[in-house]
Image (cartoon, rainbow, N blue to C red; front, side, top):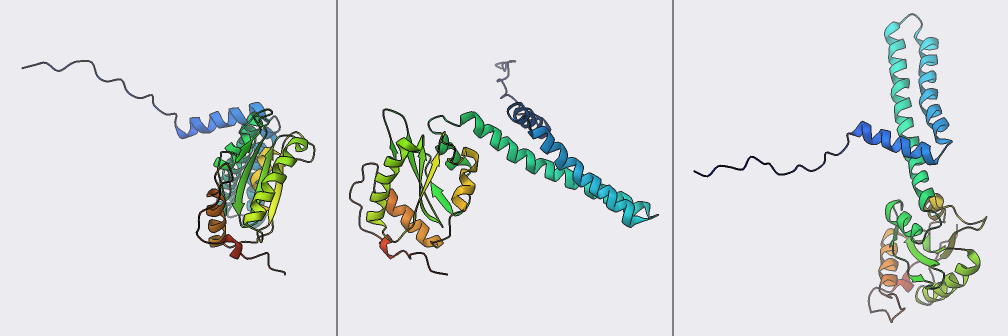
Length: 238
């Protein structure tokens, strides 16, 4: 009878536990965001202090009530700490890729809010400067996002605006600039900027507009027949 081999297959490296992962995120965040430690400290301490204060004021001699208020403040502090840590960690991560080609695509892929659809790949790129234009479609209409200095990306956005306006004359077209200019949108604020546009399309219209634009292809080839996005509603007066 053949003997089984004593050597066992190598095990996959064990992933770090949840607490260790949180600690690694905390280290990364505070390394690149020096003010994060103060925001995190305040997010934990303030709910805890509020819980203790309410317990002292409202519980009187009721020890159980005081303990419940303290526990509630502690849990509230932990929850707020995790929320703030997530926000600051995301901001710190984006600060590491800001200014690099493809940074806008990374944000569109990972942090785009509900109601918006976009591709992480740009619709046009300057081979000389690597400036790029991205396109997103949502309730606010079509957003053309320039990655690079405004002096170079604005003409690129204008060219794309003409293409979109020819196909979708009734759909709002918004410009967003992400670059080194002082009045450009910071990379981590891009999702919030898209959500700030006034709602103009319904959910089914967003899908129809997105499909029609995607059918254009990279070279602006003639679009196939299908649902006519020209029937999309123009912004209704309020």
